[in-house]
Image 1 (cartoon, rainbow, N blue to C red):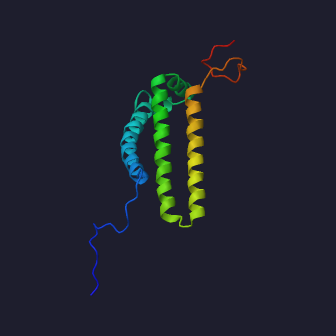
Image 2 (image 1 turned 135 degrees about the horizontal axis):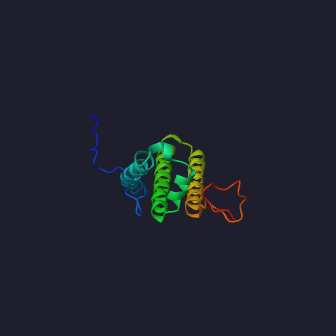
Length: 147
C-alpha cells in the first residue's frame, strides 16, 4: 500500500528572503481595487458628466491635462494599469514558457515595454502643452492666443 502525504506537509525546504510571488499577488489585488475606482471615475467624468462622449475633443483633453488633479489621476491610472497588466502577463509567461531562455526573453520584453510606455505616458501627461510657444497659428488649437 502506498501512503500519500498530507497536503500541508512541505515537500521542499523553505527558501529565505523576500517572497516576490506573494508581493506580486498582493499587488494584483490592491491595484485591481484601486483601478476600479480610477476607471469608473475616469468614465464618469469623460462620458456621463456634461455633454457625454460628444464633448470629448482636443480642448476637453487639454483642459483636463492642465489640471494637476487630473494629471495625478491619469498618471496613477496609467502606472497601475500598465504594471497590473505586465504582472498578469508575467504570470502567464511563468505558466506557459517552460524553456528558461524563452521565459527570460519574454519577461525582459514585458518589463521593457511596460517601462517605456510608463515613461512616455508620464512624460505626455506632465509636459503636454496645447499652446506651444512659437508654433504656426494654423497648427495650434483655436483657443490658443495668437502671437
